[in-house]
Length: 246
Image (cartoon, rainbow, N blue to C red):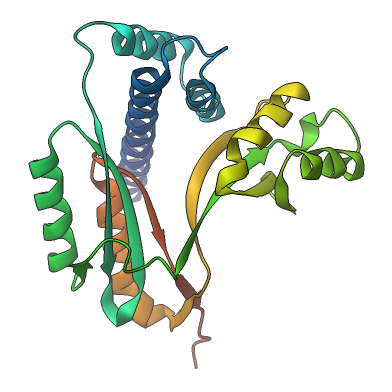
């Protein structure tokens, strides 16, 4: 019986991992479509497409998948996606910003509203969170593939527009102002560095602390939003505080 239970758990975990991987691939395929729509299919002259392709490689998307996405996005009958954003509040006043990309605006609006309502949250007017989130470029590099000592690289990146550089257990994370995103991308190209990921994110300027119990419905709401196939990214200002049992 325990063996069967273990196998069931393994299958469940694998199914969850496969579903998450599939959602990530779908989001990057949409990035590729939007990039080609905006700047054409040549990554040499389309920095947005270079970013999307780098993100695809960063999550180990198979080469065949990438090539199919580029070919389809370049065709006359390519899917047409529209970028949408939503701002809302989760339980306990946690601020949430949702970036979406869709081929059916009515469906996406209805789904996002339903998720907020079901999760005890509510949508609010766009720009209501303007003072809570700051738009920044975020790049990640593999720390074991740097072309020079980190100290020298930091100087080069600052010269290219980096505002903050931090070493994490996953690699090097670089932050830049929204308006310097392209300049830093060009600097990385100059240094022959391909980032694991590159994106424009909404970074909270103020956070709200909740204990683990209070944070639970907020995290559930965020998970539901992230599971929606039209959602590209979810940003929030939740700071969870673990409370020792006692």
